[in-house]
Length: 446
Image (cartoon, rainbow, N blue to C red; front, side, top):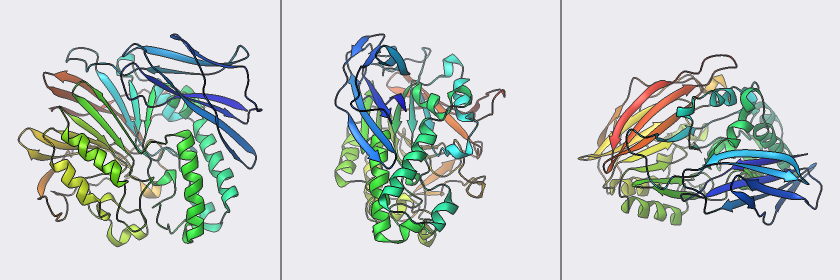
């Protein structure tokens, strides 16, 4: 039995969103109170999710009218006794100017808790110097590995109730991981989290069949697994298929490209969500930051996608995405993960307008067989002919080829109408080892 508080994703300055969860706690939930250094905050209606041997009650509490850029600690009490806490900083109402303390974003993906039993991610995060600590965290996919261990899912099939029980326990092992420095739980509880899913929130190559996942070999098995995975993802992470927020001229669009992916390889987003992305591009007033589940600067997986995972270019909708990005009058920074290495590559779209893609992956590699190999971006963007656009050269930074576990921090500040971006990589280290950054990139974009 436990309670949790996790800061989630506010969309405007001076706002906080806190995820409140009661796990295996007796019902009805009574005597609970949520407060912060800003006062008392009323709880709303609980959303239940029950399975074989567990109960989950959760809600997301939105608190408005806080100080932009203010620091807050939230505490959940039950009959006066503290049960859970979290810390966050609200979004600022302007982007700091160069020379002021920057607005810092942490980018991470691909965390398999079974490969970080010591809690090294939490240790590394906890050791960040005060001036390097992020204001927000963007987790761009594979926050859990529901299809791990692969040997188990290769040899066994499950009904819906069994999947719900096993996948819930996977979330529990991840979300409640303590370890040194607070583990993944401590990592989640310190600063707001913006979530975007990728295949392992579901299964490798979801929603298509996967060679190592026996449940995915039948339509009924895929339907059961998808229902369970979606229910848990919406409960623990987010129900939103996109999120957008602005800080001055800096604008973010966090897109989900897995939740509504079609099995016939036509779409990876709902058409309406892609329309929102197109509208976002058209109204940019400065640098745009697009968060997406897989790299845009990529080629097709081709026949290998049947055995591994389809890439975004394997979908018909990829052409619509490329044409939308082509319309921009401002540079766009793409933040993504998935591929188990760090990389920076860029494309010159127009004079003074760039497409810069930044990859951060993994934070805890699921298996050595799928890591340790770095790949340069395709030399051409798009890598094949797309009607309505034309090919441009791609420049890959050959000085940043990290394949070890890591996360990135991106520090933003304004320089006139443009935005300075400073990127550092932070290799994940074990308890007691020094935490040292690696310089990745510094550019002024707009």
